[in-house]
Length: 95
Image 1: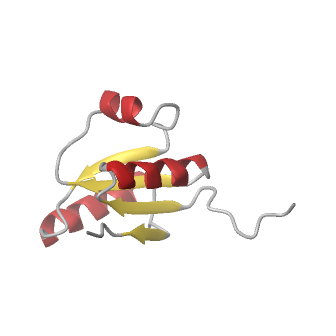
Image 2: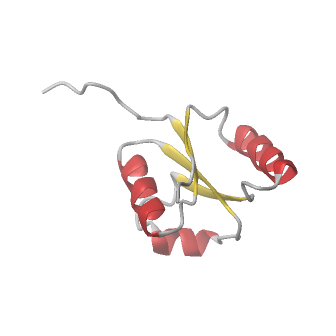
């Protein structure tokens, strides 16, 4: 069976990616081969990422930025671009 599409090596930005649904969403993206940039209001250490996403921590990074803070979003996006490149997709947090 051929894949209809692939997210292999695509860069995804996810806000709210550390909650219950966001964690599963990020895990699914990373398992599909995407690199996942989580924009979070709170910092997460490499150890915390490895614990929350076993076996996927090389594909997931957390950037500190609140979606209500334009300067923080711009800084996080600039760091993401420096680290990985321009993102291909985004999944905003929804309540």
